[in-house]
Structure formats: structure tokens, C-alpha cells
Length: 200
Ligand code: GAR
Image (cartoon, rainbow, N blue to C red):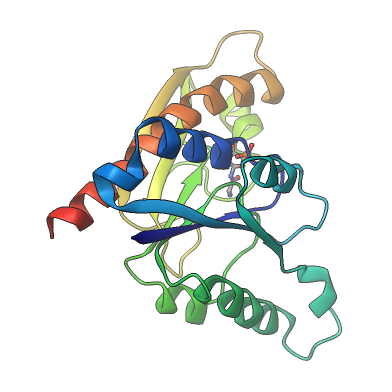
């Protein structure tokens, strides 16, 4: 059985969409894959309760508890890797995980690490993507599923979803429209990766 580990920081709606797709589309039977654990860097992430309600293993590696360390980012990533590797994941899925990862972390999971970003990459890497798309007068916005490399929000593009930017849009209304598409796209993109792994 191939294990997926999903990393979250907040609401976890993309995580929930993947968990539901795994159940609905019988990923265990089709791809010999299952969601093994959901891990958050924030103890109060709402997605943790959603995952627990689905009977999934959850864990918290709180980045704030590494603040006094000489290398806070490296120490956090090392602790996170230890937690993730207990599940021997075939795929580590970043789903609203709002931490910049060290090159060592990214190298450790090379070929097994994917992310969803709320813009049409390569446009609008980083934060506040929806407001920036509105401010730039973009007529279309969207989201991208991509492999993770050491460079933030770069890496091979695996899937993209496009939505219109409407004249009265706020960052919130645009975000909600994009998120609806994320919930369709991310499970499909993960399923495609699993299918490719099964075929290899
Ligand atoms: C999603 O829109 C995702 O694309 C974005 O955070 C949201 C998480 O929502 N990710 C990033 O901004 C990563 N840089 P969710 O917690 O409800 O899935």
C-alpha cells in the first residue's frame, strides 16, 4: 500500500477533498494508496479536526516551538521529516501548508513532493496572490499543482485550473471561486501521479 502524507496549516479543505476522493474513488483498490496521516505546523488548524473525524492519524509539529533554536527552520524541518517518515510516504502532499521548506527537506522528498498554489504560475509566486491578480487587472486567475523544488513556487507544473476575475471581485470572492476549482483539480492530479506510480 502506498502511503500519502498531507501537510496542512489551516482550514484543510483541499486535504478534505483528497481524503473524500480517496474514499469515493477507491484509491486503495485502484492505486493501492491511502491517506496515512495529516500533519499540521499549527496546533489550532481547523483541518486537524476534519481529518480526525475521518479517522485519520494526525500530528502537530509546531514551528513556533523551534523559535529559540540556533537554526529554527532547519530544526523544524528535521522534526517534520521525522514525523512524516514514520509513514514511509510514496507522496507528500502540501495542501495549504504555509511554510517555506529548506533545500534539505525538498531534496529528501525529491520526486515525492507536490504543492497547490493559488495562482496561475509562474505568475504571482508567494503570498496575496488573489489581491495581486486583481490589482494587476488580470482577467483570469486560478491555481496550479506543481512539484516542489528548492525555489519557492517553482517546479514542474502538473495541473492548472482557470477562473474568470469578475469586475466586483474582492480577494475573498476570487479566492472562493479558485478554491472550488482547487478541490476538483488537486485530487485528480494526485490520482494521476498515483496511476503513473502504479504503471511504473
Ligand atoms: C488554498 O487556496 C491553497 O492553494 C493555498 O492556501 C489555501 C489553503 O486552503 N496555498 C498556498 O497559498 C500555498 N502557498 P485549505 O487549507 O482550505 O486547503
